Length: 470
Image (cartoon, rainbow, N blue to C red; front, side, top):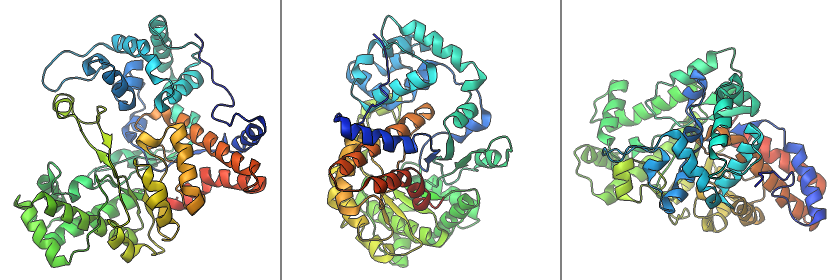
């Protein structure tokens, strides 16, 4: 069976609308990639070492891929994921790849299947479907290409035409890799750190006390001092800004902003250090700290992004044996209106504040996020994320938010990925879907073609630059 990429993939079936979509897509197909939020390790580009093997590259660390095979009954050890309890040895890379190819049919119609088809065809010139019969030949073909200089990370970064790529970093990271890349005249891209403080803000997070102690040691303050804690967080944010950061990201189970008086916050902080807070009090303190992060964003200019609504590590047994990020994070219902009102009351119309709201609960886009972004000048609509970044979900997203907030209250596309090789596939998908959506509006007489031509370029270029202050 052949593997082919239709040049008109994702465009409308109707010939007239498809022709308009094709023309719109051509205006943005070759524009540089701006990726203001993602999870690629900057050391990948600093070290510039060859990728290991096809199984490591496409399967081992991609929970989009591993979760469906696990659901079909394949043990995670057969996918190269080691047991933390000394259980069954992991399969070798070729065996992992064979297992994947045998289960290739599972990915038909999925976003991961779409991206993998794009990667196989455009990067590796693969023109046959993965299968049990083709597995070994495909493994050898990919392995041979990975051994060449053209497939080292920096060469691919240039080939992908990435202008800006943001990473996600612990607040105490020394950012050595970012500084080295910025100082290297042979590397011309921008790789920006992102301040990710969740584990330092929520007393219920494992290791919170130790992280607070690390902040205090860096700041030279008493670990029991709430004022020193706040000062240290602000100082680490400044350090990130000095090293190129443009945003601070917050991955919370549920968005919650709580406006506490300093004395109340200090009292909760002290009890948290002593391990005396209830679960409800921990949520209150974390909500207060989310409000404090907004205040700091007003002061230091970091764009505030909020990624809520994921129940992490749903399978306790899987987490205990294999650890996090192994495919069992599950979306939950998310609400913003009441939970974020204290934050928006204070900063929602501050001209120096940019707040990008995401969700994996697609009902919240039309019900809450788009109306909020349609009023508050600080609020922008985050791109479809995680379980919602599949083609049909992206089109539903556009329909859900555009009638209320238009195109210019959105963030532009954000790939939010660890899978470096999938970045161009994801951005190309977004550009095609925006072309398809705009083409329908043109053919329905709802917008003019010249407006659509401007909008699609702005969605790819001007909007992410504006929203993320690039």
